[in-house]
Length: 136
Image (cartoon, rainbow, N blue to C red; front, side, top):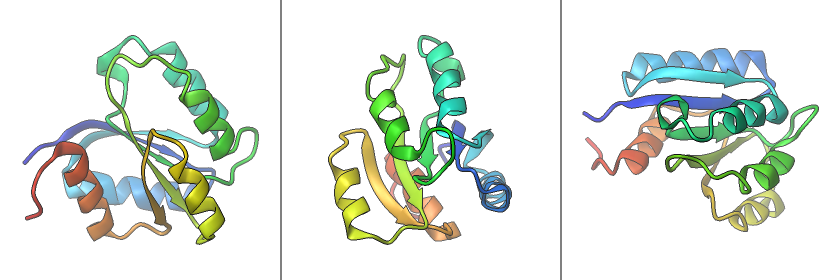
C-alpha cells in the first residue's frame, strides 16, 4: 500500500478539520496532516517551503469559503508557485453549486471537486488517484 508523506487540509471549520484529520490518519494512507485554517496561512507555508520537496504535501484538500483568503484567491496565488514536486489539489467544499464546480475546472491544478463532508470511500478514491493505486 502506498502511503503519502503528508496531506494538507485548508479549511476554516474546526469540526471538519478534526473529522478529516481523524479519517486520514486512521486510514493509514498518510503519515502526516498539515492543517491550515485559511488560504493565506497555507500559502505562506507553501511559499516558504516551495523548494523543499520533503516538506510539501502530495495532496491538498481546499475549502472555498474561508476568511482572510478564500479558496479562489488561494488558487490564483498557488498557480504562481514553482513547487519542488507535484502537488495534487482537490476542492472540498460544502457548495454543490455547478457554477463553483465549473469555475474549479478552469484551474489546471484542480484534479477534482467533492462536496463535504468527505466519506472514507471518497478519501480512499482520492488517495488512489494520487498514488495511481488501483482500488482495493
